Structures are given as C-alpha cells and as structure tokens.
Image 1: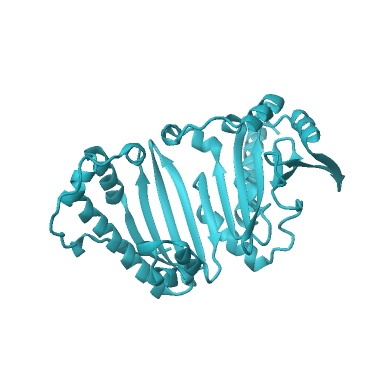
Image 2: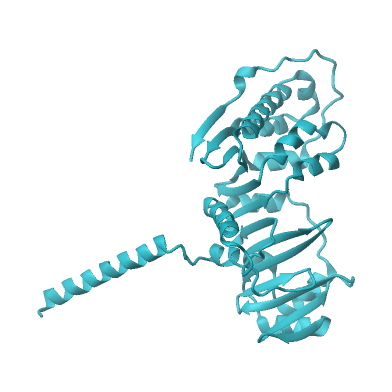
Length: 359
C-alpha cells in the first residue's frame, strides 16, 4: 500500500467512525451532556425541576444587569465562614445546578445535583467539624445543620466536580430507578424542548393547582375562571435565554384539551391590550416616570401569544423580553404626582395577536 492509499484509507476510516458515532448519538437516545447527566438524576416523584447553567449565563451581559438590579444584601456570617474554610464561592465556582422539588402535602423537599469547582478535601473537613459523617454504600454522606436550626442539609460527592444534596431526611443515590418508562419519557420530552435555554423550569401540575393558587391570591387577583383553566393544564414550562443585554422569556402551559389553551390565549391577548391601553392613559402617565413607562411598553410590545398543536397535547405560549431598562424601572420607578381624574379609554380589540403553531 503506497502513501496515497494509506492516507485515503485513514480518511475513509475517520469518516466512517464519525458517521457511526453520530448515528449512535442520534438514534440511541443516550446522549451524554452536562444537562442530560444532571437531569437524569432527578427523583421519580418530582413535581418541579429547575435547571440553571451558570457557565452560559456568566457570558451574557444580561447577568451583569441582573446583578446590578438585585438588592445588595449583607453576606451571612455562616456563609463567610464556609467560604473561608472551603474556598468555594457559588458566584464563581458553581457551573450548573439541577434542583428538583418534591411536594409532600404542605411540605416540600429539595433535591439538587450541582457541578462546580469543589475542593473535596476542604469541604469534607468543614462538614465533619460542623455536622456528621457516615459511610453508606461506599460513599461518604455528610449532614450539616442549617444556620444553627434543627433543619439539616445532607450531601455527598458523586465525583470530584459533582455533589448531590437534599434538605430531606434521606439522600437517594439512585433517584431515577423507580421512574416508569412513560413518566420518564414525558419529562425527557420537555427537557428536550428546553435544551437550548441555560435556565428553565418544568412543572407537572396536580389537578387542583390552579384552584390552590387562586385561593392564595388576594382581593381582585382571585379569579375562579383562570383557576379553572389552569387546573386543566398538566405541564407548565418557563425558559430564559440571554440575547445580548436582554433575556428572552418563554412561558408555556400544556394540556390534553384545546379549549382551555384557546381561552387562556384569548385572555392573555386581552390583558396585553389592556396593559398597553392603560400605559397610554393620561392618569397613569402622571404616576409613572417616563423612562419606566417606556420600559414597560417595550416589554409589552415584545410580547407574543401563540397556540401550539402537538397532536396529543395543546399549548398556549407567551414570549416576551426582559431588558435592562425594565430592570431599572422595576427598581427605581416612583410616582411623579397624584393621579388626575379622567374618563376611561376603551380597549382597542385590534391590538391582540393570536397565532396557532403546528409543532
């Protein structure tokens, strides 16, 4: 075999190997990635899952704006001691985290898997001094009190850059074992849809969630009609994706019937119209700073409501952008003067935007 034939053979082998590898990843359904690895660890009885990729968010100008907007609080003494003893700072050393919420009646248990830069030796030593340490199935399990109370955080190292922790009584090290195939597929499908977002939440609703939410609301916020519609949604997802200095937010409610999502779509469009009309009202103009009003209008104009038909399920989707101007307005907006009496402006029904998407 001459040199040209050898090179050609090697190139053919590399191409063939690449095709085989891609086919395996594409059709085997066993992709390995940081989000999938973390999401695969969630407990079977989960009600809510929150995923945050801080590595991606730190590269976004929006995160800097969010830090400026967030109130500056005094560093807790316990956290300062932890930081000094372990060298771990969540603002810089935490890469990504997946948090599962398990409801038990009025109580809730948090189970989290976190990736980051951990000094395992220092953290283990600190936990041993402030809490308890035991060996279980070949792993060291640490349990430390939370701020000197009776509540505790239990955690273990799954590997040098990954920890599992919970505020519950038990740390389940094989959380997905009891999940049925159909149930697991339902979660994985929604995770797949949100895979491009560095921060998202997936909520599987109980049939009475909307009624519970309405009962907890106060005064005019209570709405039996909205509660009844929300009760018919089985899934709610929220995703955020930085785009320059702004955050694109996507909310979606999903259920088996088309009627509730269509009614929610109509109600959302109506609320957007009323909000825009209200911000153009002279009385409200006198109450809001001009910059704040412009910021709120900017968010409303970016909003879009659509309906999605996936065959077995129907969804209503709301998209809008959070901007630095909105964050500034939410923090600093103050009334300029007492409101002046004025006649109400009738809503313009032609401002609504409603679409149906096949996806």
